[in-house]
Image (cartoon, rainbow, N blue to C red):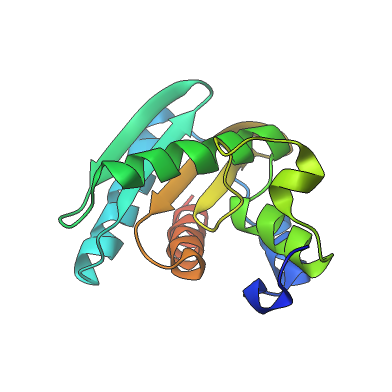
Length: 158
C-alpha cells in the first residue's frame, strides 16, 4: 500500500501539463536546444542535475552538471523506461498510483528497472509520441518542475 504522505502533486494538474506541453514539430536541433536550455537552467541554480533528451530510440542529448554521479544515469534510464511504457510523465504515473493508495511496482508488475518518480516527461508532436526529456539529481518534484519550465519555454518559442 502506498503512503499518502508521498503525494507531492495534484494529479489533475500533472495531467493538464501532459495535454498542454506538446510541440507542433520537433527536430534534432530542437531537442538539442531543449537539452541545452534545461542544463543551463540547472547550472544557474547550481543544481547537480543530469539531463537527457531522447528522440525515438536515439539519445540525442546528454549532460551531467557538476555534482552528479553515475547513479543519476541509472535514474534517467529508469524514468525513461517508465515514460516510454506509459507515454506519460514519470511523476504523473507515480503520483497517480499514490493517490489511489497503490504501489507502482506491485500494481504494474514492473521491476525496479522502472521508476515512477519525477523528472521524465514525454515528447509529443501533436498526438504522436516521439521521445522523452529526463532530469535527475534533485528532489523529484524539482526534477519535474524544471523539465516543465524548459518545455514551456521551448514550446512558446516555436
